[in-house]
Length: 131
Image (cartoon, rainbow, N blue to C red):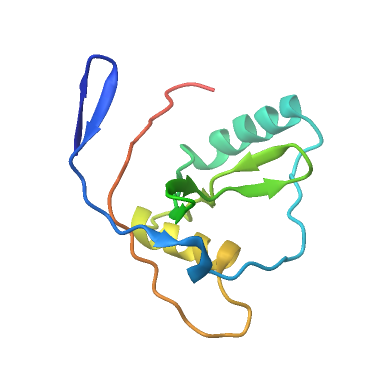
């Protein structure tokens, strides 16, 4: 793990960084937001909380190496919004297995070839007490 000294995070975690050329990129059908606006999204979330309780979600940080620097891969939604891959966990679903499922759904191959996602570590855990 890392520690904070003088406002900087010193990381002692080792992980593999692979060149961007190891990957192929394509396009999939566009993903659309469920809600027409931010207030509509928050209202839907309040309604769901009343029915099923706390929402659990995960996101993955995928690092690659390009031009001598690490890069974080982001998904582009629309023309101006970027996000980490991930999403909502199913009820009772384990975080690691859920992240693997979501990565496969979002980034997985479309030719049916199975792939194994390696989840290295947890970067953070946030619990929001109130909407």
